[in-house]
Image (cartoon, rainbow, N blue to C red; front, side):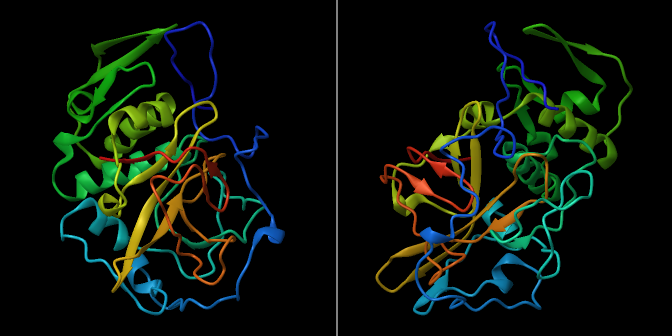
Length: 291
């Protein structure tokens, strides 16, 4: 169970809790809301990256991401074989298996930690690690306390006492990937949608949306999905792929679009729309962010 530090008396769970807490923002199986013809978008089932597996709708082309960017990292991320199920951290499948189109080839860990905000944090951290920029890895606890990989690998550890956090050096230097994952598990334990929202900046124009950007509801419970692909037609109209982690901790996955099967898994997004329905969550209002 994730632990959340608050500077107020009230304590609650920050990350998405759709499988535990009923909410009007959560959507599961609502087939009556689907529309349009089925399976129109070509899915290249033998391909193993987001960009290669998902063809854009007719008249659209993939938007090129700059090599070395976070967006490029996401759209070229390796996927598990087509048809892979979403598995919880304990290896068992979740109940709902019809609202995703692909599963990222990345571990979930063995504890109930890597939930929705944590999935974004994990991918951002993995991107910086792979780019040789792990010195830039720093995330905040929900309390606002910053915790950097540089401090953690140098042996500095966080000690939580009620609402306060202190740091002391208790371990030797260790810059191994195994220790990096230990650091991320610590972040997962004390971070969430509230801290992630504060670490990112708002996107206020549709033309600024890009792969790697977030759609987030900070709160208790909150949720976040991230843009994992963008395509555009000659008119400049764009469609987007969305991916997420969820609660309990489970496989990171590309979500389908049950509200418009004619373009699924692509979504039509608008930063000014009062609400955005995704496969398993309604974001109201829309709150797009980027690193």
